[in-house]
Amino acid sequence: MSRIAIKRALISVYDKAGLEELARGLHEAGVEIVSTGSTAGRIAAAGVPVLPVEELTGFPECLDGRVKTLHPKVHAGLLADRRKDDHVRQLGELGVEPFDLAVVNLYPFGDTVASGASPDECVEQIDIGGPTMVRAAAKNHASVAVVVDPAGYGALLEAVRAGGFTLEQRRRLAAAAFAHTAAYDTAVASWFAGEYAPDETAAESGWPDFLGATWERAAVLRYGENPHQRAALYTDGRGGLAGAEQLHGKEMSYNNYVDSDAARRAAYDFAEPCVAIIKHANPCGIAIGGDVAEAHRGAHACDPVSAFGGVIAVNRPVSEEMARQVADVFTEVVIAPDFDAAALEILTRKKNIRLLRCPEGPSGATEFRRIDGGLLLQGVDRVDAPGDDPAEWELKTGPAADEATLRDLAFAWRACRSVKSNAILLAAGGATVGVGMGQVNRVDSARLAVSRAGDRAVGSVGASDAFFPFPDGLEVLTAAGVRAIVEPGGSVRDDEVIAAAEKAGVTLYFTGVRHFFH
Image (cartoon, rainbow, N blue to C red; front, side, top):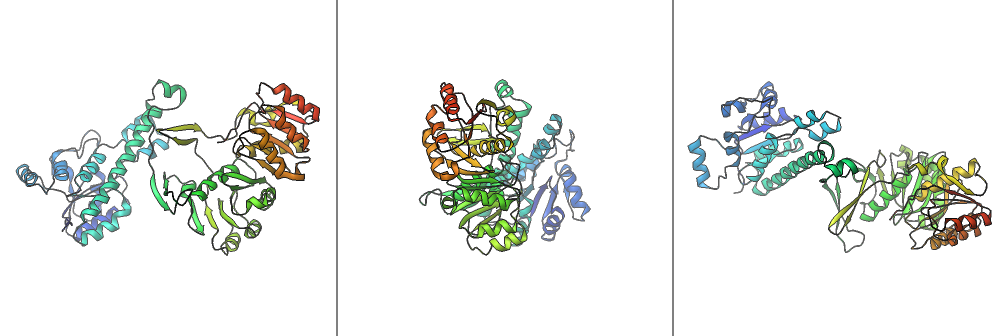
């Protein structure tokens, strides 16, 4: 039988949630409890018999608590493999009683760092005894069960009553324990490399010589981008899209997550109420408005055909009026910080639409891209460079834009960030009217934007995510009736592009900043 009865437990926890109930349950089941410091104090205060670890070891806690459990009577009791007669014999000779269970969780190092504590305070929160006990018990899972999460106390007491954990259960507990210490050590090492003791390169560039992160599986997805690809969702535990609450609808797919991520970024590029509709990670339409219903009408009008089956992101709660509009169109996902009660009632009538509540906007400062054999990192493009401020733009030709035109140019410039390069975006009235995305030359992107805009190109404004290498792309826009254009500038043929704008009689601004998006 693979179960090992739990007769003796070692408990040492920083997070004392559920501790008293656990201790009472173990005591009622006849389990002897050995414990440390304040943990032992809490157990005793609950009226449960407990043996303080210093009485077990015959050695007092010392060095402000840095040394409590680092003793052979603790670790031999955790590490003795009782399948081996020699280990059992040595325990007897040494007078060491084995443990069947270790319940341990660690000092909150990450929380201490996040609180803005001093370096000395952070160092003091680096747990030594805790990880040592966890690793010892986990290594010896053939003989010892280890529990690191208070959420597992209920299952622990059930196992005690059932005669102990099975070997397979102890393996899973050990896996969770090693994941716990690995995440802890990663947090400590990352803090040392990134903040406390950066090398010269890190001090100058902000990129540490060691970079570590851990994720936990949140869901196994039906498949990846295509049905023959396996896929899963992992989360870093800090919320965001991966931690969004699904209120309704079918299970999220891999492609749903990719498009939802792109849609959220597009919507949250704006401070005003904004709606972004995304398909295959590109915008079908983006618009701002006095409220989300107005913004949705503007975004949907850009390309109603492509919006069918799209993903919608909103940077404000979804209102009843917007919900009625969305309900008329087949939509895969709506993700928003919240939904009005009436909006939920309307949208949940649609069986398959996925509704996600994600209260906070995108917050990550760094983005990652896996390449074969490595990882690329860069700061997230927040459209917050000095050249992104219209007050910093340089008028190259044509009349200075009036207030309304400048407002549309600023919208187009900001919206263009979310379009895959090469990107040309046409806008009017705070909404996109034509989007040319993902072409391998800029003139084709211009043609695509004009084609999608149709008659709406006349009187619109245009934005280009990078400079026009030749005048031809700009000429496509001006020939269609675009009246003002904003672009980074920086081409060796800028003079030719400016001359083409001047010949067409349009306003041309340079920003000095590029927004490639691949």
